[in-house]
Image 1 (spheres, helix red, strand yellow):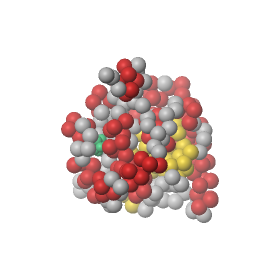
Image 2 (cartoon, protein in one colour):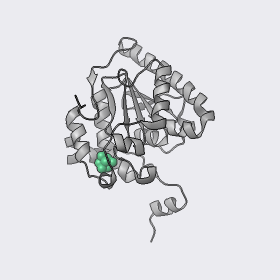
Image 3 (cartoon, rainbow, N blue to C red):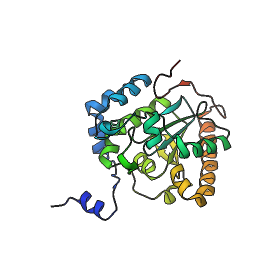
Image 4 (cartoon, rainbow, N blue to C red):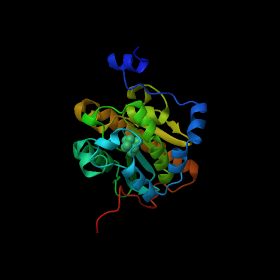
Length: 245
Ligand code: SF4
């Protein structure tokens, strides 16, 4: 007999984003793999992701794509999953979508080398750039949670539905989540469109720019409330893997 996931997939309604409940979080907290990942330092986390086979994507990737940026950065951008260019290079948001993200950052006076950390929900490319399956997002979630803990951003920007729904534990379109300050734990979180979507739908670029200005205001408010300087610089590089000399 088909499962509910099978039926939803047949109707074109998957992936189905699962709400996290307290009991399940408690289960995760007692999960040995999650507990081990939660104790890893930045370089250990990168090595662990490189060796990970916790879901089937570990067998089909070319490179894992842990994330890139500055530990201690005030901004953290979270996207969906690596695409073909990212899979080949091991860095998130390269190629056309990456150039658009860099341009958006530059318009805010930000650079990925100095001000932000960028990661994805999944660290390995789904074949054919399909959307992440809920089981894959669940398996990879401990890495994202640990990255957020290590980076300690003042503000998280979720790029697209996969990132927003994974981080917020909701199932809702991006349009209904924009222009509001959500919370990931105690950290403010703002939702906007994924750059790849904006390349396909350029008419929504203006909305994305509104979202980034909204996010900048939310960041400034969070810094003020925390008594931090207006734009602190990052504390140290946390590159995807050791850089060649
Ligand atoms: S996608 Fe995440 S959970 Fe799956 S193999 Fe890659 S690192 Fe591991």
